[in-house]
Length: 127
Image (cartoon, rainbow, N blue to C red; front, side, top):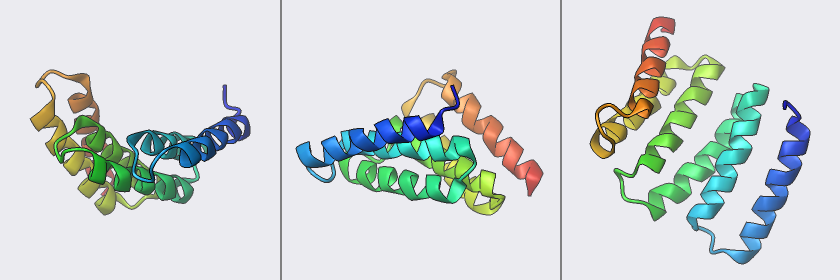
């Protein structure tokens, strides 16, 4: 609906509740960080989005196996935020990590593989 301040308000409440109830590296905290990052990304505040996406990635790296598809989503989100900032070389690096994981962990015809491949093509054209 585009009501980003309202979305942030509720996602931040969600995060505070989870911080009190869960250990610091719990995967549910990562989801909260990612959700907040997505709102900032949608607002075009890519630096703020990266701040939250990186917290999400930090937790997932500790909590999940290195080839888990959720880890690929985190790399993809960071890559797209760097793309939004115009830092295409960093974007490409993160998107390629996402693609590598998705190719190992998902069926070859999975739509997330096509999505990240399209993102990589877009970033390469911008470089």
